[in-house]
Image (tube, rainbow, N blue to C red; front, side, top):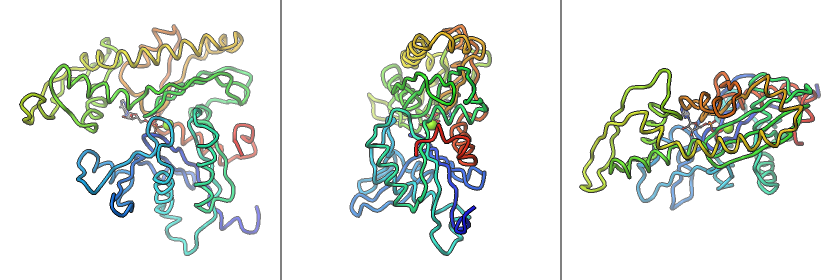
Length: 342
Ligand SMILES: Nc1ncnc2c1ncn2[C@@H]1O[C@H](COP(=O)(O)OP(=O)(O)O)[C@@H](O)[C@H]1O
Ligand SMILES: [Mg+2]
């Protein structure tokens, strides 16, 4: 431990397209939607996270809500930097300090991001007074968070279904052997539901409502063990323009999502077909692990299991698997140095 270590704070960040999570002092101290609300005239940030999320779809001309990481890429560098800065500044133990502590950070990034975006993430971290910065790929962090010993000469398949992307990876000996990233995940499911409501029920619903429908009665298959009850969905009638509600069942949502889930299935099959045979043999025994919020869609594990003929397990607390893994590497940088990108 160096003399100035007491002035350094360790921080692990999962910078997700839907949610940003931060671990500090071994605890998840930030778990917020990746959203900022901006005053268009002045460019000033007026709200971030949950508070900005509440404003979504309800803003007037001078306020804009932005998801800086939409579609699995950093769409707005400035907004994402400001967002992380605010999140970190508001961590209680850091807020109390009289000085700006220097930071040691491990940041989890989608495996599909470009070199330019990686550079931008680093630059942002440096602007926040980070002295040591490590990046880690999302599926690797998810695997560690699930509790898999990634250093073993044993293949494991991880599928992380987030907001913007689904990341599929086969991991062995501390490295990613083959991977695939598709831009079909939670956001696309939400859009599918909006589209279905518009075309089948003549009902125009907002993005937040569509997400609630997905969480309440969303399903990947009509063949569920514990099907949810029908739900009343409110929005605006496309023909009359009046507010209206419609009754919707999980079966309808399963139909609405079918095409998107097929695309995920295809990507999984393709990744399996590219897996070297020795690792395929391992995966036959260990099965597939799911993480990310999208993996909580009802029946998705069952459907993938039927498609691949493999056991499929959803991680415990799938929304936090990635940040948990990122936090574990932060505690033992030496052990994980091969998976961290300096
Ligand atoms: N119970 C649920 N059923 C289906 N989807 C869910 C559920 N809970 C959260 N989600 C979805 O998970 C996605 C967010 O997952 P997350 O892993 O945080 O994404 P990211 O890593 O991209 O930030 C969102 O699209 C959200 O709607
Ligand atoms: Mg994620």
